[in-house]
Image (cartoon, rainbow, N blue to C red; front, side, top):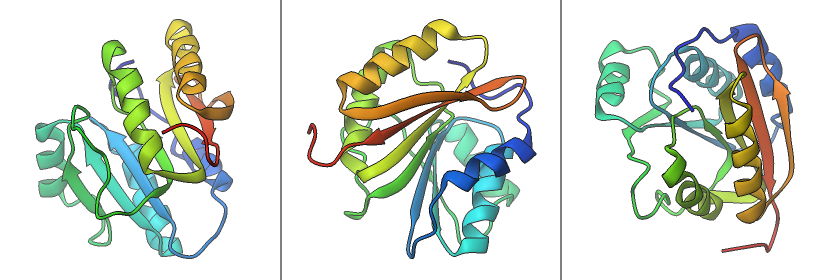
Length: 175
């Protein structure tokens, strides 16, 4: 998977966000290593609905860029968050939705999903953004999601450049 370099259609992101079921105190996490379209849409969506948005920047450079550029609202939290961390839990709170647009290396994907599974609420969703043409990566992610106790996995074409894999954490499954 590659960093989001190709343009991503903001209108299609807005349509995708319709899958988020309204509820009080939703917490939306996002692992990203670049780009501003998705993080900007998530920030705006969370601000409008009074949800919590945590942007976990997987590189220090991206974290510094986002923090100094002031592109996100003060209501959002931006942190440098290397995917190699031993634990993804922050302040004992779980994500309702976890967006992943960061480039997770092939050898780190299983570990990433295992740690992500622990911080997503039961029946919460993980949404993984992939370049449209990366069919092999799509197949690998789907297999890994199944192996790490995610179910109801599907993928949709978001726009001419991007595909999103969506999967649900099942209650009481896995560790």
